[in-house]
Length: 355
Ligand SMILES: NC(=O)c1ccc[n+]([C@@H]2O[C@H](COP(=O)([O-])OP(=O)(O)OC[C@H]3O[C@@H](n4cnc5c(N)ncnc54)[C@H](O)[C@@H]3O)[C@@H](O)[C@H]2O)c1
Image (tube, rainbow, N blue to C red):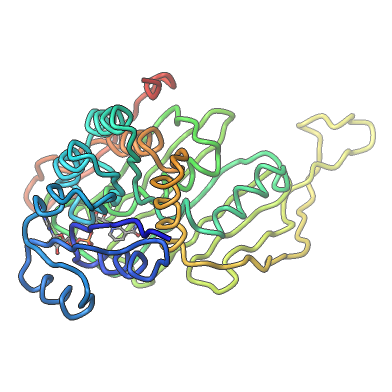
């Protein structure tokens, strides 16, 4: 089998996980790694001894043997590198978010289409078996009508300076919720955040989304929390589900809810109804586990070799970036000693996404 030649730009905190999965794939060859940092290039040489190491991304773009380029650099650099790679005829897998504006994502999508190339964003959770399980039971109606989804993505650190906590963490939650609900656009978006650690860069944010059919989503995002928490709760009219990414059994389906009981003579009239709280069994399914990054890389290789449509292509990526942008800016000037409150609320036409 001829291996797909992959190059990677960026080998900082997250890059090694991607590179490890490419290097261990039987279908790919990690040919070149590029990083601006001398220290990261030394790391590359020590950990991937058979791989060419460079400080210049042009070495990748000008190499006719490289088919796919993974971009794992800070978000602000994604667009320029991705555009250059596509113009050089390379398939791209760009870390989240794909770019920092909807226009940039749309432009990458257009370039990819013109060049018959894959443009994929690394929304890792869309390749997570537990998230797929959740999506499947939602689609089968097991939870009933979805009422709301509540997600907590909390940590002490890792403090970034190139973006705020929203742009760092919310791409995960937004992409998961979009995936679970079938990718509709929210009707309204609102963010409240504060910059406690670095002035002008929010480290804690609460995000509220309202979707059609009275579905709400709420994210609590923080670099300033005592516990590492990765919990997503889905409340449905029939049952509820909890996805805890820190657990071995990641999904629990809870037969919990509130049932309306008919009271004699009332004919289920809302005002006169009585309610019973249902607290039944908890089911923890045995979900076949595979590392999401390995599945993500396998999907990228399928897209390159089979030309299949990417699950996390520019259309999905643009929706995530649009929602992030509609959360409003994080850089409102501060009064000395004061925190800051940002909100953004917009109606988003659902047609925005169709090119
Ligand atoms: N999917 C996930 O779960 C996940 C987790 C963490 C980070 N990420 C994403 O991965 C990306 C990188 O994040 P990180 O935490 O590894 O950042 P990082 O700052 O630790 O590493 C970025 C690396 O890119 C290098 N770099 C920067 N600009 C470059 C350029 N023009 N050419 C070559 N090298 C360049 C830097 O020297 C650095 O080594 C971000 O987009 C982030 O959102 C994704």
